[in-house]
Length: 252
Image (cartoon, rainbow, N blue to C red; front, side, top):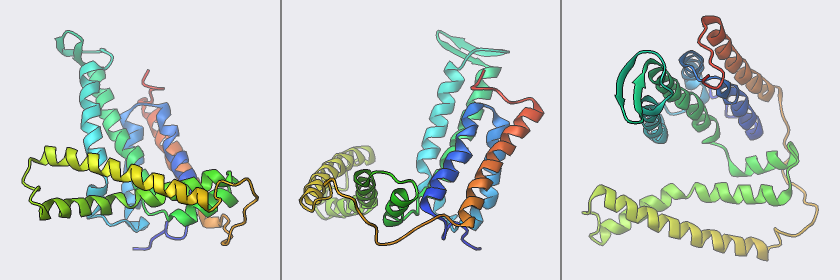
């Protein structure tokens, strides 16, 4: 399958993601979110994404969706037939519909973010932010450095796991081991961030000067097609919701 995102500009992906997901926030209904999610799943093979590894990369969505759905079922605005009532808990037709809409919408918004932003090269992102969006150089350099460090988290996690096994500390419970490694990862990230900030300051990255960029970048027709396609999918999904009478402006 061709990888249609491989040669697109990073800022075009960010803009396309905003055009795709922001209009969906105007309504909380199942139809618009399902239409958008269906279009994303159809386009997924053409984005160069490894389908087998996608569930691993999208594990936060599989965690957030049920939690959000359960809270909405129990504490959503009561309306329609009531199936369960206990204190502040009211399970009704409306709360169930809102829960389904929220769960599908989490995947409709989160999945394209993982697909479109996950493989962005930090250097290309910095070039695009500076030359196309004309953002301040300090912000651009800080963004590039932050994205670079974020890509090291997985490698650090694996290294910490191997170090714990070599010391005989891998027999603890999974939860206790995860909490300990998360704390160690936080400490490692803070130390690395402090060292990087010092090194960047020593190299005058914080100086008030006009910077130049080694690699020119600009938007191409394929970038405009990507942004237009994302906006079209979002508006079409909302149009289907309006046509079927399921459009609910901000859940009202």
